[in-house]
Image (cartoon, rainbow, N blue to C red):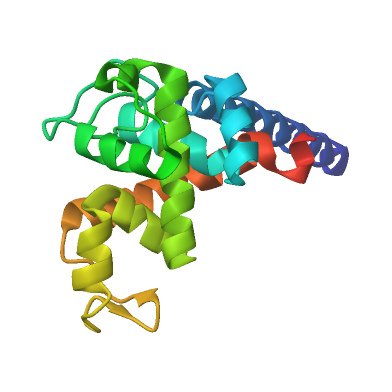
Length: 191
């Protein structure tokens, strides 16, 4: 009789543990989906396809840069969802041949288009996502002309050390967001 009671208690503990584990997973996923939404899907999908940039990268950059707030302006003057400065926007328009008003950086479609175009441009330049994210945050010229020529920073195309804590943290944050977006929306388990 004692053996049967012990077995029943063990079975109950196992069932409760499984239930708690499942509940914890569901709560975690719900929280992660709230902090990692799929907003502006029409524009992300459109420019992801046009510029062949994985959507999870675009969502991760938007999440890291602005938390999906299209009207945000940084202390350095970067504007909108993907935090593009007017100087960068003007330079990118020399590549696209368009002549648009800087005010369109607040427009989600324009901002996502040009932010994704910049990601593509940087990827064509570096062919490495961490270098792309470093250049997106710290600037193309800084990475290309300063860091790429200093083996203490970048050696054989691999980041050795980033002299700016902000950029180091930025790369980690974007990569973490990519992992979360993949897990939540873009893995084979979700399709």
